[in-house]
Length: 182
Ligand SMILES: Nc1ncnc2c1ncn2[C@@H]1O[C@H](COP(=O)(O)OP(=O)(O)OP(=O)(O)O)[C@@H](O)[C@H]1O
Ligand SMILES: [Mg+2]
Image (cartoon, rainbow, N blue to C red; front, side, top):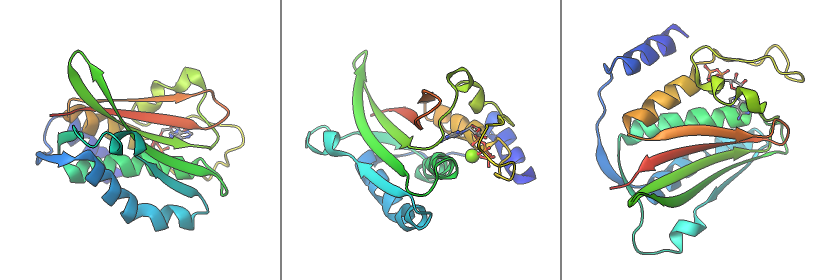
């Protein structure tokens, strides 16, 4: 807890060094998926990587200037939340898409789960530090300090990107990480 809190403070004040290098997002996600596949499946949750839309394009594959270790940590925070709030038999899906906005390509990495969802009026606050809401149906014992998403947001913003969540509050959640391509 103290370690995470001081890490978040260091991120916020720009004291964490980032080692940026160009990385193919397809490769980054494939290796992330291979690394965590067993961990997620062991929790009884189906884990899917869907990059068909981008793979079919062949040319113009998305490349992002990134600190791959930090983005891996960010993605693992999202995936562990997805697992934590999804009961066994459920599903966690990572997908990749590319979107053009004002002539700039953005790699959109999404993490979707079939869990308990997030009430729509909480979708912004969950990114604030120490923010956790008491959900009916979630036992009090569910662990967490409410720092994971604040750390995610700092890491994504350090890459010039954005992160946001969508949910109807009932049928799971989906997190979108948008990163500018080079
Ligand atoms: N996939 C999800 N489904 C449902 N609720 C979620 C999901 N991800 C985040 N939340 C809600 O947002 C809150 C904040 O998430 P965050 O990752 O910042 O903290 P945490 O997981 O509670 O603790 P920590 O990440 O520090 O261990 C969570 O406590 C939970 O209420
Ligand atoms: Mg968390």
